[in-house]
Image 1 (tube, rainbow, N blue to C red):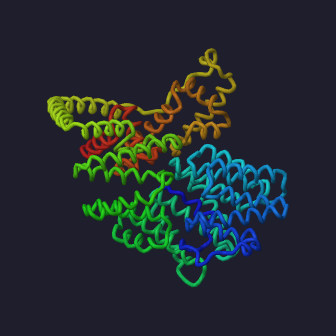
Image 2 (tube, rainbow, N blue to C red):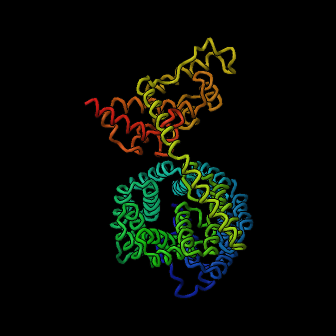
Image 3 (cartoon, rainbow, N blue to C red):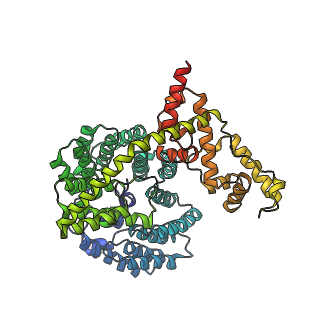
Length: 566
């Protein structure tokens, strides 16, 4: 679940999204400090008032240059580099000016601020690799300057990029460390309220993304208690946690409570958050078969988004539901509209984030392109629709003739493979003596010997059960590089790294299932986690690839055979 939260995080200072009660004079702007003007700048952004934003920013920019002070001039460039009315190229030029002007400055926030501004602008425009490069440069400067405020913000930003790529555990790890460091500060709730709010809000989102609803509830209650409405300037933050509570209750299947919380927060949150309110309510009403309310909220969820906001997997389900709805009403134009939405969404995600393979898509991009062409053809000729229906019916009939025979043949094969698994010892991959392989290997005898010892210890300690154990992570643990490790695994184990890891995990879990009757009562998802997999899909795929049968079949047969033994 991702929309552009960081603008809220870095700029939020506790005022609501309503506009200004009165315009501020140029003289007042010129007398303002950086911090005071920062608040005014934020308020124009929250209110989406680009006219006042430009007017005030120009006044502050000119005032900064009158001082001829390097840092004051950088501050003028700072606001220009975040201007919503500028192009990306213009904002990047202002950010580069900050860097050039303060390159040798000893100020705690410069030139770090210039690199953060560049990263922010790249991020907002979907250039995530360039954003990451600049965040990393900024982080180095922030560490050298010992600016904890910048360090925390940069880490939060990198964590969000991790989350956008689907690495919610990595994101949680970073954000939890930031939260822990803030909450250890003396009187953090009073002296560091804005940083505390940001870290708490992001942390809750990570738990929700991981579907850890109990943990999310714990921190939501903390936020609601701390920011409960009173006369302070931070009243509005209370509704942000009510909003998060509504999403969390959705995943807890407390649907009516979810609707109540989302409606309560709605008038006090920004448009991306409002879009999410509509999205989750549309899902609930769709499940309830209340199509009018589903359609109302689904259309509003889409209409409140800008193009860059549509970088969230949840909106794929929204568009799929809309497509399914319009299929039932034969509204092919609307169906085509939302097919295009998904195609655009998938294209953007694939270019920047490389959508994870395990995400099962009802409408993957190639299929959508094909469907799009079919719909266009159907709009031009009704005969094509009839032809496709006939082909489908004939194909279904032909397939049904072979289905029964194929099924029984497959079951016989499954039983044969099951018996082979039961009667065999599922051990780790065999070793090849170093002296026998050194002649053909590109690696030296010493390196291979060291890596074999490392792999033996790795297997003996069952470290292959660690989730998301990449080649680079294992190489780091064995104090080598990925090139050496990949070649060593190929030589010593006779397998690629991926096949090697899957073989260890599948062999391990098969033996455990044979011996542990408690484990056999687990769900496939829970067994997958015991074997080191993050989801049932990837576990089932690996299990089938190695054994030729699915874990559900193996488990079912194993349980039945154990019952007969009793």
